[in-house]
Length: 118
Image 1 (cartoon, rainbow, N blue to C red):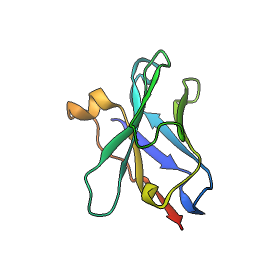
Image 2 (image 1 turned 30 degrees about the horizontal axis):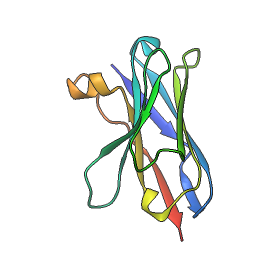
Image 3 (image 1 turned 90 degrees about the horizontal axis):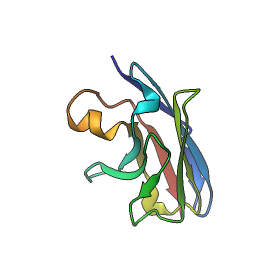
C-alpha cells in the first residue's frame, strides 16, 4: 500500500522560509507525477504545486514565484521549498500523487503543519 510521510513544517514569521519533504513508498515513484496540497482551517484542500515524472512543474497562481517543488527519485522524495511566507500560507500541507488520489488508489498522510505569524 502507498504510504506518504510529510515533514518539515513549523512556526515561522512572515517572510521566512521552510522546506517540506515527503517520502513515498508502495508506488513506482519515478513514474508518477507528485503534488503538494494544503488545507487551511475551514477551507477545502487545494493543490498548490505539481511535478511530473519528467520534472516539469506547475503552480497555483497564489504561490507562483514563492513555492518551488522538486523531486529526488533516488530517495522517493518530493520537496516543497516555500519562501516569502505569508500568514495566508498557514495550513496543513500534504503530498500525494494526483492521478492516484483522484482514482482512490492512495490515501492522505498525516500532513505537516505550517503556521505563519504576522
